[in-house]
Length: 214
Image (cartoon, rainbow, N blue to C red; front, side):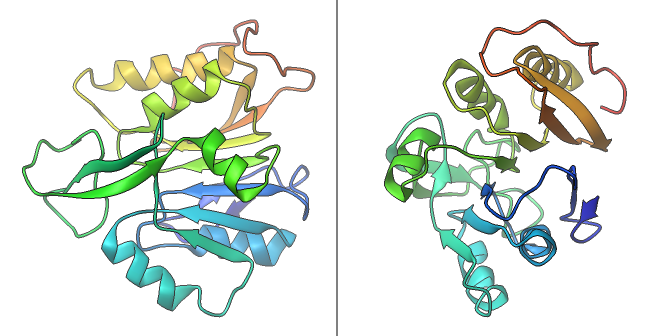
């Protein structure tokens, strides 16, 4: 089922999502239609993260009516860091990048947290759905996720082109599949992965390479 706007929406496996799921939405920008749709369609509660000042201002308006949407002005990274530089894109006041995706000079500093650190602070022992739209930093965060103990049931990842081009996207997607996930939907560079039944460890047999749709 596709939820949210044409710009900010994602496809999720509707037969899996439960009201009790712990959902982390990392990188909200100026579009939380997917998060609100998850809440309204399935009764989930959302923990959302984005340090960008314009996103903080937007969420205060857009989610004021919804207590099940909880927002934190943090970035998500591979470690806790009180001052990570987020570099501006050349086209908007959102979509800032911790890896300087667009090679610009304008930046702001913001606190970042590792997923395990966030889970501990929020009192969660799992993440059931993790959405990553983090402007190029998804590669490092995915690697950290795969190398660690966290295994969400559903991963929604927007892949961004970095210096190695499309090759880095395919390699990251294939590594995610090798960690026990199946790519079930792809729209542009947005890919939804579902954890295969019984695949909980970080060493898993490879599925077919994901070289179509990226």
